Length: 198
Image (cartoon, rainbow, N blue to C red; front, side, top):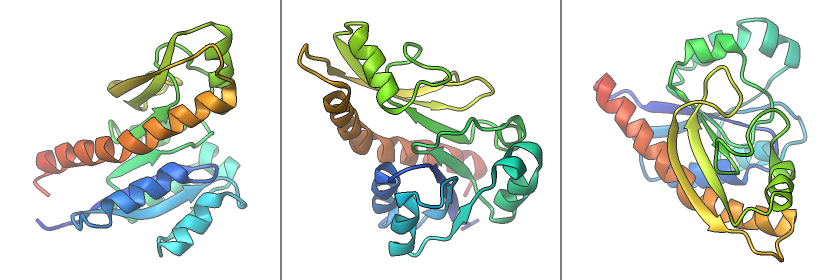
């Protein structure tokens, strides 16, 4: 089989992690970022998709949570792996069931600390600072039915200084995300491909 391994990136914001993943796979023809999925029409990730000639879809909340419309769409597009790169909606159970162990999320803290509902973006970093943590970092994990709970694939950390603000800590975390997420996505994709004999 010479089927291309297709990745869909789900994002809600500027799309900096999406861009790093797209750039990473431009020279790896066996793995293709073939779809960008967003839930905000004004999200910067759509501009990145256009600049890189990647198809996009803007999802509608009710259809996403109350139907199989997008599950069927992703299957039709032969998506092999979903990467949540700053996607702020909880993934519905039907989508998780349709893509078991095939949805990756990146969380901007060292899970299991500072995870759960409402823990995203600067809310996470502010909580880390208020708890006087000495370290923070990123966790790349598989998605299950609970927030920030699935099997961990990778963690790395950075120091939190007494001078850090939520904004300065966010910059440190973004550097880690950009450095490590594309490689972890590639390694996990390769492991799935070997199981499928792609």
